[in-house]
Image (cartoon, rainbow, N blue to C red; front, side, top):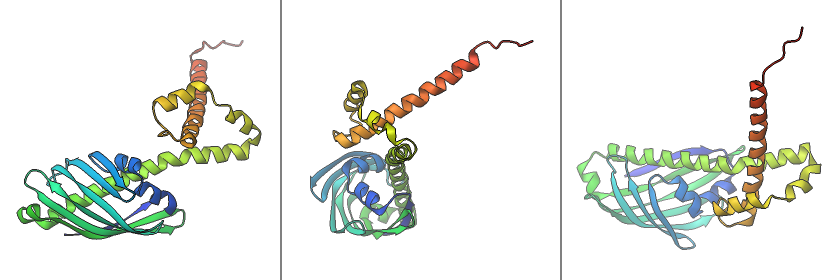
Length: 225
């Protein structure tokens, strides 16, 4: 069964590439992912419970990336087993990234083999379900990329508007740092923890301003004669 398509992401090829090989990003983007473990630099063990008919079932196996040419292309190979009588599964294909203005166009094409399932159901039905899952993956990946970008945009805007506040930003309240670390928002990386802490400061300032405005609307107004 042939699988191919394209998807446009609002990010640079380098950022998209990093997400496509990052276990954390993949865990949050692949639909119904239950486990994803990196075995070596380019090999992953995966387990997922697909809830999309007619591919409904539990799948587990290995994914191998090869012929990596960052941030332009790589080859992917999948082997594994499926429950509910699905049996052995295998697939391989190529993923290509190309820059289009400020966006990245991801083009994928390859083959997927679900021998028992394809013998029981029409190929277009199985292919349609597979494409729907890929659509869900790219949509979730786009959301993940968008969540990473606003922090950089806000910092750049502040640097242009008020460079004098740079020193104040360096003094991060210890409480916010502790909250970020407890919630593991930065995955233990100091740079990401700093970004999340700064974002939390700014969100807090906005909420405080909104609260003050709300309080102002609730105060009784004097009538001036």
